[in-house]
Image (cartoon, rainbow, N blue to C red; front, top):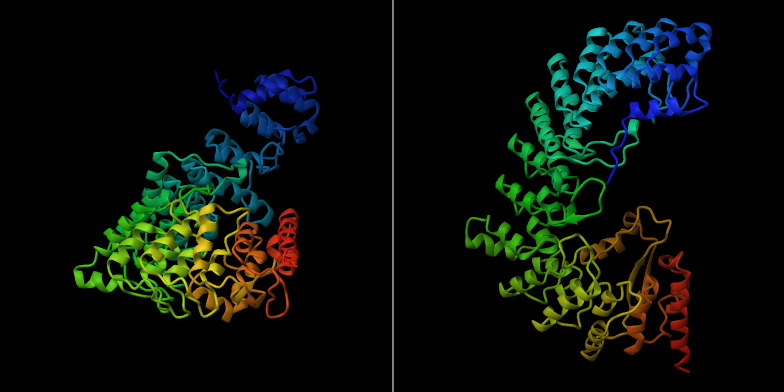
Length: 582
């Protein structure tokens, strides 16, 4: 049986009543012994400055709800603005009373504080105002505004933001009724309102448990701000609000309110991508968690508000391309059938981005087997090459950020083999070579594995038996631990060409020439792929364009920094392979 956690008041009372070292003044306050409190502060005025664990005597009196003790302490000269060690943010007594909604205490404290624009004192007063707003204390905010008409507009704007950051609809409603906020301030508050609640530094918060009423109040807050004049097409951290909300599954209520109140479903980010483009991949499920899912509800909501499935981003990709890559056949068809007629759907299915990448390339890259089968049945060319010679088979066999499942996990080598096999069964040419010299074996060699299954070994053997050269030479972009920006975690298709043409833009330190698939495996630290390639005839003595063997690449590759054991295993494997040739 779980014991109910004691209240703070009870914990404080128990501590000071039981501690032999406790200050007599603290004990008297906890015992609500008015006469003892008076005697102690009269005989020892310095006790007012004590700060014993939970705060000053004034803090303790507020925590213990002793209004009489507060009055006595204030009469004796206790400072309402003195900080405390008893809270994570060292809040003063005024702030404690305000944010906890203890109006009688706040009233007593305010009578002893002289409002001023003095920077130090104003900062303390402002913190009380902002915390009261963040904690949803409408009465405290109202009392603070009635107490002094010297609050700056900036402080009132910050209070509105504080309320919005914690979804405190009623504080925001009060502030808007009292203050004429400018468009910029309303937009700022709206950008916070559509996001998750911020963690409270004052309570050292690290997790927020949301309930249904929280999301309801968030939606009401968004409506309030929009009706007050906030722009539904504003941005949050540089991202249009519609896109930001769409990327967080549990914020679908916020997305709905935005769309219902004039937000453009086709607004774009700095790469020309709409919310529907983004929802072509798995999205964050909840605050502070790595869990990701395909956001079907968000897709349907956007489509219901006339989001375009054909709008092109800066690369020429449409939402349907992203859907083929990162969702499933059902959701791809859902998008396609928003188009009014068969002719439009026929054209959409055969559309490409700027670089000649088809829906089949995207589906293959994402290992979406059902989508691959459907697109092949619709007559898409299984061997169509894009601008740098990538066919769907190459896209299927290279590591990417999307795989079978709809949880955002990267494609596994097993999934790549399955997607590749479907394409081969439908007539894909295994002898394809990209503009960079990559073959299907180069693509597979980028998967980082300790060992490979019989299925993968058999696939490699089949490719070689069908004429793929295990020692073909290709270009390889390599990064270092000091690369800035960080290089892409995965890349396929025309992205590889862009990385080679603009290495600095993509965090590429060197563009190597003459790498065999075994060099690829060595560079990535893929012991399993190296084993499989060697078992099927790869030559460990091959050198790249500057004379480096696979073993030398493995010895110095950045990808194995901090992985000494794996590096040693790889080096021994390659050395033994060279020795066996003698």
